[in-house]
Length: 324
Image 1 (cartoon, helix red, strand yellow):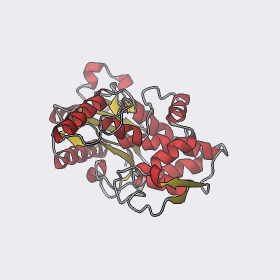
Image 2: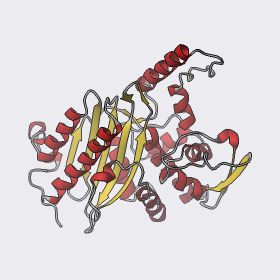
Image 3: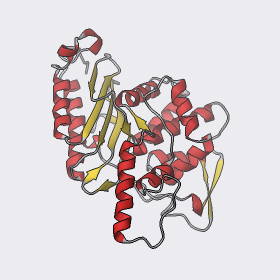
C-alpha cells in the first residue's frame, strides 16, 4: 500500500490557510473541539512522505508517564556507551517503592525490605508496565532528571523536558511539593483544600512537559536510529509495542498495523483530568510509518469518553493513510 500525497500534503508545500483545509487537519480539529474545555494537542508525521498535521502542537503539556520513554532512551544510551549494562543489578529498598502502575506493579509484589532487579527488568517494568517504582530507580541510575533533559537537548528536542521523577510529581498532586510534609491529623476539609491546591499547582507547573511537536520528534529520531544503537532502538521499540494497557490509540488501530507507544495518565480530581496522553509509532505491513503524539490536559469527560477520543484519533489517522 503506497501513500500518494494528495489532499494530505507536506506542510512545507502548503500555505497555512491551505493546510487547515486538508482532510486530516479538519478531522483532528473536530476532535480538539470535542475535547473542550480540555485542550487537545496533536502532531502527526508521516515518516515516508513528510506530511504533517499540527493541532495545538506548540504549547507544552504535562507528560505524566510519557516521560518514561525518554528516561528509557537515556538508560539505553548509557548502555550503548558502556556506562551501564542490561544485566547490571539494581537493589531497591521498601522506601523506594512508589505507588501507581498500569498493571500489578513492583510495589504490589515487593516483599521484604530489599529486592534486586536487573536494568533490563526495570526497563520492561517502566515501559511495558508503566511502573513508577522502576521508572524512579532508572532516573536515579542515570544521574537524575537533568541527565535525561541533557540527553534530549543533545538531540535537538528543546520542547521536551524532564525535571522530576514520579515521586516528585506525586508530591505536587498531594500539595506538599513546597517543602512541606503530609499534615498529621488534618480534617477532611483541610485535606480537600490541600489536594485542590496540589491539583492547581500541577496544572500550572512547567516541569515534566512536552509539546506534541517535540514528542513526535523524539519518536521520529527513535525510529530513524538517531537516538540509540540499532540493538537499543529495537529493544525500546519492542518494549513500547508491549505496552498494551492503557488501551488508548491502540483501540483504533487495525490488527495488521503495529503500534509502539507510551501513554501517560494523571489522577482525576473533581471531574477534571490533568493529563491524558498517548504517543506512538504506527507501522503498516509494507513498512509505511506514521508518528502520532496526542496530549490532552484539563479534560472534563469520563474515562470512556477519553478512551473513545483517542481511539478516534487513531482511526482518523489510519483512515487517511489508507485512502491514498
